Length: 163
Ligand SMILES: [Zn+2]
Image (cartoon, rainbow, N blue to C red; front, side, top):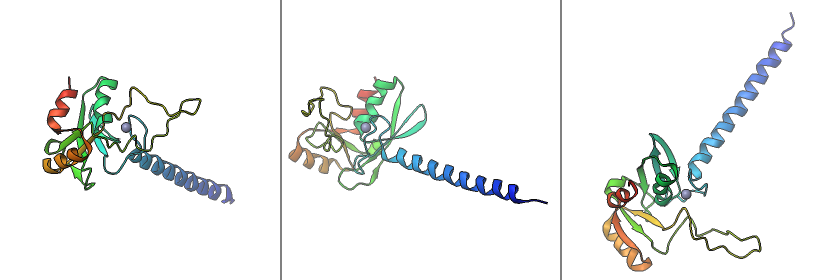
């Protein structure tokens, strides 16, 4: 009996299976590192998790997640935010948002150039205005004193986007 074809098939299955698995891992990781809305890399201190129609996804900032409502026309629920100062996960309903400060981790490294190599000044950016989450109102207010913007309760802000 010749078992070589069988052994070859078995090896192929194992190899292809392994490749498939590492490929899946690669994309699964990528999904956690790039924003579902704008495809920018996700900054650890502004990572936002939101679900649309019950499907969770990762976003680079609350702005991107909230504007998804406008883009997709479907209700968006932010399920997790990240404390900009500590990098810890936050329950959105218990956190504060600083809107429109001069700090925007999403656009900081942006090197968008026009075809003739001049920096672009887009009128619309998915990640603008900047929104950063904070655990404490006090730290949010201290941040505003230094970087401008306004402090809002997360729930207050989210309500504006549900219309
Ligand atoms: Zn984004």
